[in-house]
Length: 327
Image 1 (cartoon, one colour):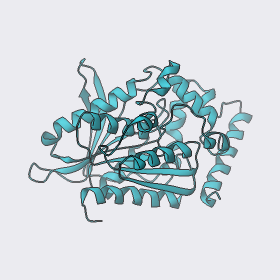
Image 2: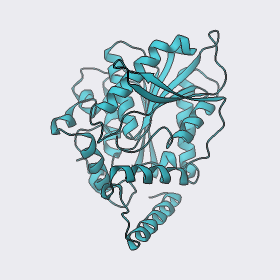
Image 3: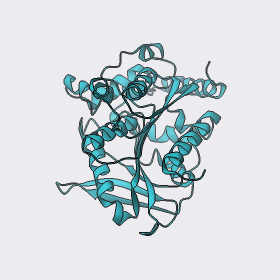
């Protein structure tokens, strides 16, 4: 059964869409030019999100890629770290179907995680499609992860307490980078996966069951991925579909422990569950949380939806446990 607060969100969303249509405006991302979709998404997220928390320090900066180009990022600090007291760190990748979203759209969430855990948070503004198709987003994410691991000491970050996290497409990036880190023998303490995309093709039962009427529609999903994936064979690449790697792996015990959150009324429900169960069956420590009555993107609705705030608490607790921090 849908959560009553989610039902209200969906009613208000439907009303807003009808109003837009009556005024001759497009109401869905897949009907908009990409730049317009990005603006619409940036305006929509804060409406239901929690209020941005004050943090000790927030710094916009750039990571320099090997080719000399810049990779924008933002660091959040809950307190002043030092070499004598290094801080745990979460590298966070925002959602948005690899096409929309930014460090600004997820600023409230990253601030909350920073202060509640507490931990340093690096939020990455990876390149978006269609200007930068697959595997650009993954390449940016993986380079940022390596950079943090290499610079941990100079950043006063505890190298043995670095986790990856993200929602939706960001969850895909976190999962893929966790695989890459394990393959490279680089230690991570956790992967925090919030309704991640994991499968090559959007053909699970939940993709059709919740194709319309639950905020994230099948039309939008297919549009997002048509921007990001220029070649059909890219779909089976584990950097886009980590479930492909997990199903073929002999064992996954070398992966960082995973906290996987999925929503009951989400097209991505089945693949999130499948990924969690596949990892668990092959040796990874996994905590799977199925949020009843919730829809995709509910994690960004904590300003209105009580269950979203409960999910925030669960995510914070998962990081605290793995890092041995007192709640």
